[in-house]
Image (cartoon, rainbow, N blue to C red; front, side, top):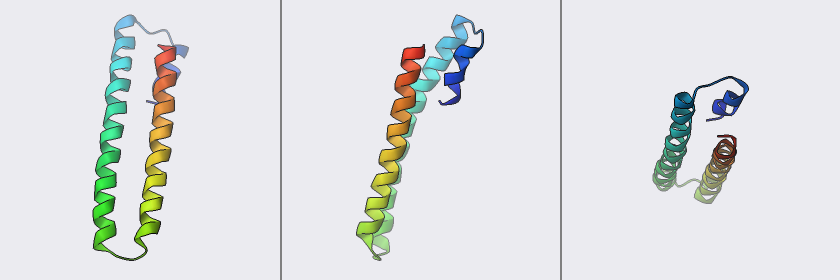
Length: 82
């Protein structure tokens, strides 16, 4: 998704632009699904190994929040570019 932000620097036909936009949409949805799966698995791991689970949950939520924020920013920028 991040590399698609460089595509306006090149001359691209309309068909390729529509493919890039579709890729960004599906990629964004995929990132959300993967982060949800990561959170569920991380909860399983935290319950399996009971060593400072609050630290693990906090770290997981921080990682998820950071990655979703970055992907949201990239997605919104790509919407305005295309």
